[in-house]
Amino acid sequence: MSTSVYITYNPNSEIERTLAVRLHTIGAVNGFTMYLPDRYNSESSLDPASQQHIQISEWFVCFSTQRLSAIVKKEIEYALSVFPNPRNIIIVYSVPNGKNLQGTESCTETFFDPRTQTVDQAVQDILQKIWEKKIEEQSNNSLQKHVQETNQPNNALLALLGIGVGFLALAALADDDTNTAKTKRTNKNAKPRK
Image (cartoon, rainbow, N blue to C red; front, side, top):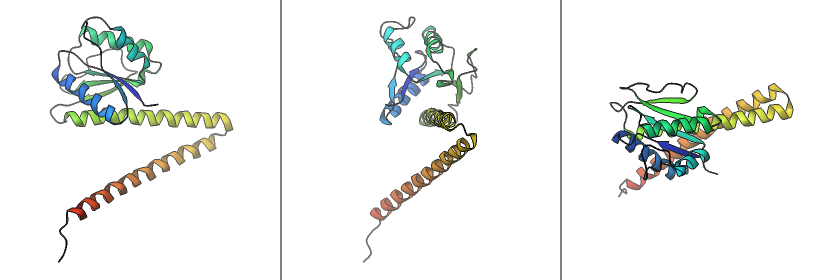
């Protein structure tokens, strides 16, 4: 089952809309199930379709780079009421404007700086946060299950170290694949010798 993400943004903010749509597109291409708000009928009341999408999503991403609209406030409040783990609520603030929400300390917060980051960089940072937290959650679940089954903390530590070594090996393989692909492209473009 793919990871599901609900993305909300202020309807009056072009940069937030651009970030949300870009995140939606890149996430969908990378196998995530992505949802955007259904605001066709109203920008002041939470639509039942949006409520359902928030309920079934594993992640909630909110762009909060300026003063929040009434509908975004309702979406955040609803997400806070239905999400079992508030760390799965990611709030993206603007560096120039700073944090503009109260009561979200238990959520995952990140900052976007339009002066130094491109939209694609911001989107990649958000997807990276989701991926890291998903891996952390899966690792923690595996580790907890292992400790419960064996009741031996030393074995759990070994399992955690093994996961770390596995991630290092995976990163090394990914680097090798990238370098091999670059070499092949370079060799293809090279002129034959006479």
